Length: 136
Ligand SMILES: [Zn+2]
Image (cartoon, rainbow, N blue to C red; front, side):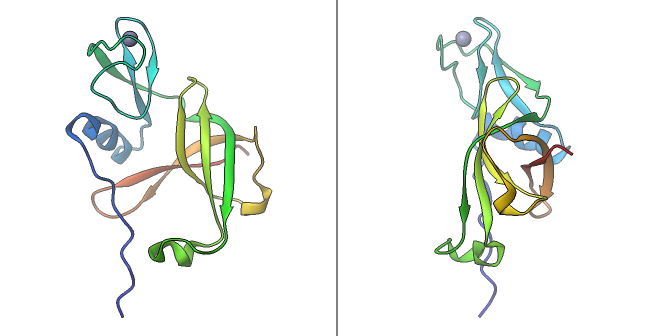
């Protein structure tokens, strides 16, 4: 049996700038040019004022672990070889939250409020995925 393929992101037209930037190892998010709200995940309108006057800006890539879990088993088949791994909500310095993985450390060393920074992991020729590692 072939090794199961890991799923790839489904890219909406309004999310394409995010993935293009990620492939250049830049972490970006949207900012509302009318009310200043920081927005993630990619949207077609501001979550605060519904304006579609949005721009893409680059994040610092730094934040903290807001919450997390260690996946030990019962993962979707393609992720079984990764177990145990960490799924976390990262709160960036810019106030937005991203769902990602914590990598580069023992999964059981992760804790809430731990400072982390973005790293990019190549999924295939088309995608680099933003993940986060502990700040040294
Ligand atoms: Zn707005």
